[in-house]
Every structure is written in C-alpha cells, then in structure tokens.
Length: 389
Image (cartoon, rainbow, N blue to C red; front, side):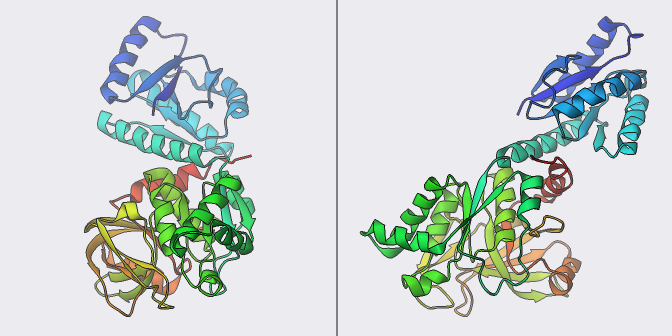
C-alpha cells in the first residue's frame, strides 16, 4: 500500500533546507509513499493518510486545519516526526490537544526500522478496514440453539466495522439444494450456498448447519471448507461472533481461520486441544474425509495443518471484548471421540488458560497460522476507532 504523507512546516524555516531533510528521512524508511505536501484537499480519501510534522511552531497551523480534516475523515491522526527542528515537541502538543478534544491520534517516532514497521502495521489495519466497509455478511438460519451467549449487535457491527448483517431463512438454502438436483449432496449444498452468496451479494456468511442433518441427511462441512478456501468467509452453527472473528482474520491475512472449540485444557502446562469437523482447505497440508462426528453421517473433514506458530482469536458480538493468544501447533491428532480436525496447541503463556475457564467469549475460537497478536491488537485498538456511516 502507498502511504499518503502530508506535511506541516513552520513559515520560519527555510523550505529548501527542510526539503532536503524530508527526502533523506522518508527515503531512510524504505516505504512506498506519495508526498502530498501541504495540500490537504484529498486528506482522508487515501488508504492511509499520515501528517509529517517537519518542524516546531506548527501547532497553530494544525489547529486551523483541524475542522477541515475532521470533515474529510474520521480516522485517527498519525503524526510522523523525525525529531529534528523541534518536530517531536510540536507533535506532542498537537496530540495533547487532540486528546483534550476526545480525538484519537498517535506520534510515530523512533528508529527508521521502528517507524517502517509501525507504518506497515497501520497500513495493513487501514487496508483491512477499507475492505470491510460496506460489505454484507449473511446469517443463514438463526444461530444454533446452544449458542446462548453468542448474541450480536448489528448496530455495533455496522458502526465499528461497516458491515451489514443480512438474515436469510434456512428454507432458502433447502430450496436451493433441491433446485441443484444433480450431483452428490455435499456438492449440491456447496452450489446452493454459492448461489445465495451471489444472489444476496454477500462476502460471507454463517450457517445453521445442523439443520441439514435432518433436512437433507448430510452436512455443510465440505461446502464450508471449499468456500473458505475461495475467500468467501463461511462459518458454522450460525455463530455470528465467530464469523466476525473470521471476517477480521480474512481481511488482515487473506485466510478465514479455523473455527474450532476447545475440547480439553491443561491449566498447568497451557496445552489445549481444539477440534471441529471443517477447516478451510487452503489452511491444511492434506486432509481426509470422514463422517460428521456428532451425527455419524454426512461428510466431516480431518485436516492436517502445518505444525508451528499459531494465533487464537475471538471477538464478542458487540465488539466490546476480544481474546488473542499466541502459541504453537505441536501436533495434529485423529482420536475417534472428537470432531474430525483436531489440533494440539501449546499456548506461549499458560496463564491464558484462565480466560477459557473463567470468562470465555463463547466456545468457538478462530485459529490461524503464524504470530499475529500485534496485528490483531492494532486492528482492535486502531481499526475500530473510526466510525462508519
């Protein structure tokens, strides 16, 4: 992503000298940027807008600009400074003024490596927020009856993420399965879900999948695995908070994540077992087809994800709470008395097992490969600060 950099400069400073320092500083960051100068006409219309406070004595200039900037964007203010010519002091005065007026901002200052990394994180967060703004996600059927704590606030989801939640009767899927007619049942379910996605212009959905067991004597496990691997977020059991967690994961990393529930926890060692009967096909090295665990019918997936670092993530339905933990997938297993995809994960901090046993956000959590705590925390703390219309 190309970062748009706007400048604040005191009239007392020589433009030629400041310009030379500017180029040296920005080039040292090794980032893609467009230097907008002091023309703020399109501020906020770019994927990420940063204000480079080049000198001291710019506080009054910013204060005069603020009403215009607030009209153009509701995003936090990112104040970049090299520290030369009293720019850091001016940035601190500006940030203090913003906070006094209940506005969000941050000073980006430090080594070239730190600044580059920080701007990269903010770019990914901004890009993810832009991807989600104006999207539509379906709730096909109501949430499963056992999800008694997994309520959602459509208003909070719209305000904080820019997402519209669309309720779709399960009957629409069943009618679609009948219309497909030919093919094996898992493939018919897949095609009917794909048709719903296209008809309602959805970017993803969560499905009350257990209704399929009695209605068509099969499961949605394989269909969901295929759709997730195609970039269409597809969650299980009508669990909307789990779907939203997958949506955020997908926007940031390009994968939906593995929706699973803890099957066992060792509070002393921090080792946990997570299991579910479906996993995105683009997350596994190989997979096998089995029956669905609870019912013993249909198709379940036993997926084998590459061992190594993982991150566990969950947001609540009103986006007021979240949980993030890093760990390591130490092995995949295939015990007969659990959902078919089973992962043994060692938490980096065994004390985080306390969350699962004392104040969990429902049962389903999202697992993704890699260490992504910093990125997810920044999305929560920064990405959810910008209100959507």
